[in-house]
Image (cartoon, rainbow, N blue to C red; front, side, top):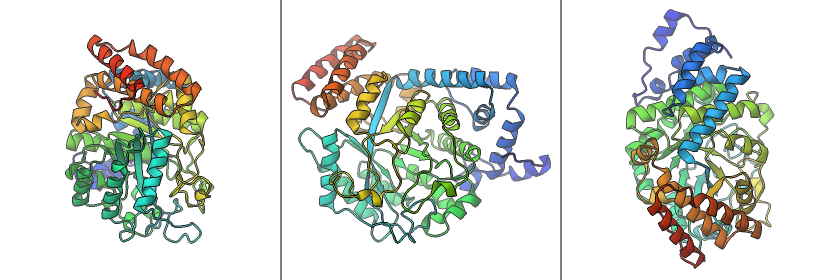
Length: 487
């Protein structure tokens, strides 16, 4: 989609664009997005400019939204291959071959919003509604611990009376309190509706990891059409949620869009502008970026949304996001197939869900058809053990690490270490130690064999002799029953 804009008019409509503004309409400025799209279209074959952008990207310090959009518009095969190669290199430099594992936990699908792409919408009378009690949450968490999970993403529909903040806080306390055999959930990330600064402070005090909220689409007009009723229909309040979270003391936030709802180019630029706004305003960009694509569920048919993103375009989006925001974790869920996840792992993704259920109460009782209450259909149905085995076979190190959050390495403190290339000094040994925990407590024989072989190789790559020696000692302790070592 090409946006033709008169130059004088363009200057007028861009007058209020400000990356540091606290007003959504100014830091996600429609005029600036449209001007960026026009600029990228005009320069998609400007090889001198593209070469300059790639040289800048190779320094590993990121790109502006305009520079990134020029790369996304370029369809030259050689350039795209260079983009993929650069994305691999940058990911390896910062994250190595570690892939962080997590699972979603759905507490309730009661919702008052009218979102037309989500089966939880208030007018849906066919989906079974359910809200977990604290005892049911306990059973879900034990089931997740018995898989081997240490990190959860807590999910709930927006319903002020049925799912109030008090329920969310009580649920977080319940999750953290459960220690079953050698299992423990050590980090709870939270994906709930936009809320107040006061409530974000309560979430911070409850010890959450990252606060996650997807924008769905940054186009204001389309957003209003997709969200006709309910609190979520307020585009400004929703878009400014991360500012309130930061003001409430949560310095790890995660953003994302639902690709397929609107023109992917527009949302790609908006996503990067949001990241730039957080960096410019608070000194730290998003801790994670998620890139879900629309999926079928209950009364939702993806064919009703004509902006589908192909696998190849999706891969380019992931690769260019990786080089544009190099220090940000990138998440792909079980919405995507095994084949697609393998493609994007190669060029930027650093976090995966595994063994996921997107229904309320879907982990503890697998004999019940809880998929009827799912928020979306999953495409990767493998167990966590199968996914861990697969990652090991591909040469990755599955990581169950939660150390940075628990050691206070969040926000600008995490980013400072990442930018200086030092975060691997902590992450590499922590990944190996948490993988050893998984192998000892939960893994199948093949997974255990592959994992121990990988640990033996990777521990020799730890640069510091002191850290390597301590890591070897802790790895040995883990085989003798001790748990939860971290740098």
